[in-house]
Image (tube, rainbow, N blue to C red):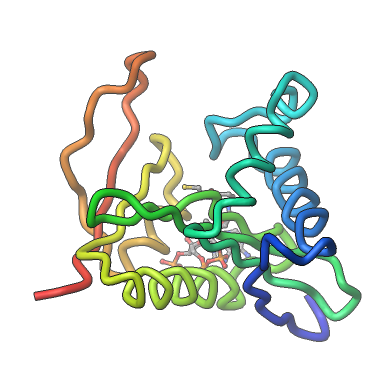
Length: 164
Ligand SMILES: CC(C)(COP(=O)(O)OP(=O)(O)OC[C@H]1O[C@@H](n2cnc3c(N)ncnc32)[C@H](O)[C@@H]1OP(=O)(O)O)[C@@H](O)C(=O)NCCC(=O)NCCS
């Protein structure tokens, strides 16, 4: 990727920000269906409303990496839980990989979680996603106990303590 990128923390109240998040999410699902439980096909069967509802949550954070030409090249989200926040929707576009975009996105969500007073950040990664696991390990995430999902899918849960 030439020209670098900028991080934008999105604001649900800004009408320009939902389309940017939507475009980034759709690009992520089209590029890396192996990495996400959501499916591109869900978009037309109720997915848009769900994504939009989550985007509208004032207590969540949505960060997009934007290339010089305005296109989204990466994204990550954070959702608060019961003292522990969740890192969600991490993606970096193929041409932007290996350039620190993932590092910046993770750092932005972590800074948000610390401001919330979260004790930890948790994430779920699907088996075999070695690039993502390498990124998370480098940022201090370690394996955590994973509750069995309703479909029995073995997700790998990783967590990072933010306090103590
Ligand atoms: C996982 C992902 C976010 C990493 O983004 P990134 O900004 O390239 O992150 P990094 O530069 O730190 O690279 C992370 C790992 O990806 C691999 N990687 C690095 N450059 C790469 C490139 N150009 N192409 C492919 N993989 C690369 C390396 O294994 C690296 O680990 P290392 O630091 O131990 O060498 C990105 O590959 C991605 O979006 N993948 C598809 C979606 C996905 O898996 N999301 C996570 C869902 S849990």
